[in-house]
Length: 283
Length: 263
Figure (cartoon, each protein chain N blue to C red):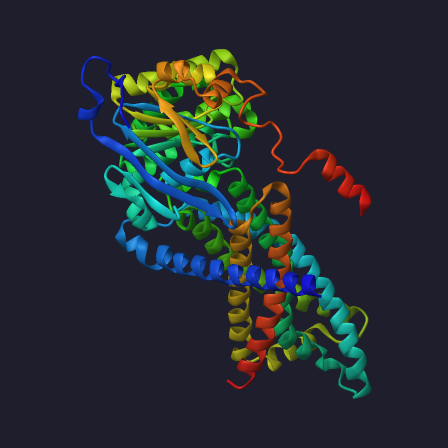
């Protein structure tokens, strides 16, 4: 994957920065349903890669494979140069401590307060004094604008707030890579812009690599250094935001302009409607 | 016919999956309880205490009630038979041995299947559908250490404890009827109960309660982890946890009773 716009534009070309995530020919099926048919993706330190694609085209599956929640059927996924397909759960732990994940729903633990949710990974992995943990928790909550929610339990706050607390938890250990599963879903436009700023800030100031799975085109163009379009289990288009905007590919244009009509059919049925209805009536 | 066979096959696979998951959980539990604490991964004591309150304290009233009333019913039924032989005072003996060795472990195990296995499966299943378990693992935190160990430990401590209370309640249920209706003196009832019991009755009852606790805890946790497919999946997992737990308790009870008879 070539790159035109590095994370620290004009400072160092991307090729010189270390590769943090590398997928090669990743395939995954569930029973007879093939979800990924060979995906190649490279992410460098400090780069923000946005993975776009319609529902059911393998975005979330790719994310689950990259965080080690599932194993690929074929191909390899390297995180910090280590092929995670061959690692056991315990061998994955040192790697997992170096990345954070923001899940679609926030995935906060309902039995703990928001503050305890953020403190959990810090308490378990960094042997720090409780007072220091408390300060870190407050700082992380401040970053997502929710310092007042520290003592609240997840059930007491809105979905968007849960997601922001989830983000605070994902960055609790100052990870080097952050995976975002639909960070914009359920957020109002102002909060979405704030989250985008945060993603950009983490990437530019701290050199955090971000892999963002999203449908929000406005947000995607705001944060992306590089974009890939996943369709039918393969990457059908990729490039910088400018290249994607200028792309002549009707599929890319349909996707980024959000058109109902185009190469991607709205209806996902192989059968002719009239034939289907008549067959049903004949039975 | 072929559909019935397919259904049977699916059920078989599901059961196989359940036993594999239970084995995996049990092996993980043994590691995190027996080995890991020596390697700097302590057991989460506060969470275990919280789960003990949830499992034990809250279910005590039901255990009391059921054992007491079964004690009442059983003593009247037994007394009726014993009276024909003129030995109605032996009611106390039957109640002592019967409850300590068999009834209290079994009744408490079945109550806990409905109370604890169901609640464990529902809780862990909901956590799974809400991606909480995936989040836990993504944070390099082991789900067995964080979720199973406190819950299974709590179950292993509280179910045998509740069983002992159940013994007393059952025997007390028989006592109330015996002195009130059967005209057996209180001292005769207790003397006969104690006289008939041997040490083996106590440890057999205790052993059963520990094994039933494992069954309840493993069924709840395994079915919870196996949940897939949203709210309906959680419902299915919860039902399965109760059904598997009750069946396995009854089967285990039969096997244990036969085996221990020869010891």
